[in-house]
Image 1 (cartoon, rainbow, N blue to C red):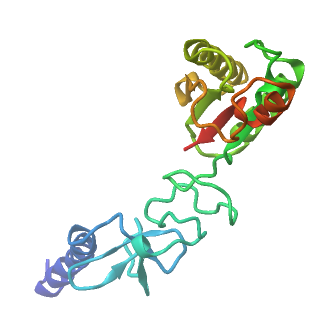
Image 2 (image 1 turned 180 degrees about the horizontal axis):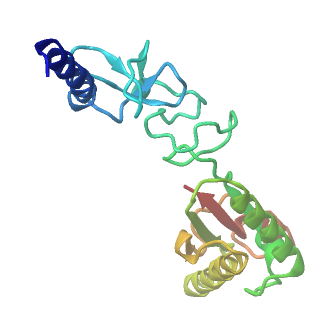
Length: 221
């Protein structure tokens, strides 16, 4: 082989090696490979120690890189680095991953149950069907806390037991509608956290006044 051909052959081998080394340099010197978006939306990029912006896996240099920790494209309060649902609608409630979850729901015990009972009424089941459908319609894997409350009439121990049974009934029904039981946490709170302050004497007026206290609260997180 002539000297000229040997030189061309060596140069031909050197070119791809040099390109590979350059690409490796761009990625290997990345300050934080999870932290940057390139000027192509939602494409991961790198900024190397030389301040160069490299695009994702294709190893090409990009025009700009943006710090996703300082960006919140959908305005949900979760920065783009941590947002697993980057296109949530404006104003919806989201979890720590930026995925939509249902707004907190308060359901009247009069709607959910019969008097002094923990068995769901048809109207109560219909109300919970709506909650379950809304949970399943959102992309987030949301956790639901279910707290049962009573009015202050009766003994503390009885009210606590009744509120526990009611919270459990709601949790079990939601699980039967396809909500993961591991995502449901039910507890009875008895006559704590009264939202209406009424006469302590039991009367038709005070029973009506205490209606808001007889409730089940469903909160998502």
